[in-house]
Length: 189
Ligand code: NI
Image (spheres, rainbow, N blue to C red):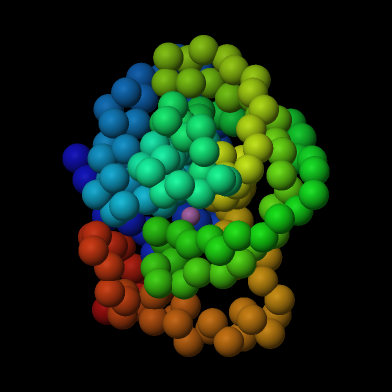
């Protein structure tokens, strides 16, 4: 099932999502999240973006492999679900990359993020994992992890930049934005 994607301005994107009861069967929901993300050409999707305030996100960077970009190497197995993740550490030199978000269509901005992370989470089989990621993988996880903390990539912009984007963001909240996927806009009349 493909869910509509919740747009900027919806309060669900600003809540700190709650832990999932360990052992809960999330198979169908995870499948649906992958399907929703793929249909929207995304590389990450967090549960709040489909209106569910739970600590769950999925990533799939396998499509980036062919891009031939050094930062995007080693993506062939980077298709995962993260349940109840806990960011343990973020280290290294911050580096900039232009990010986008399915909940904030048609806006891309350079965002600084630290190079390396350590994260603890349950996978889709409820196996506890503790792993280290760097580069683009770390960035994708950092962006999705922010979603379950109620944070968005535009929060990192300067106030000037935010002011400049205000009109566009209001349009997005009203659903006045062109996307190739179904959206749920909080201020749509
Ligand atoms: Ni996003």
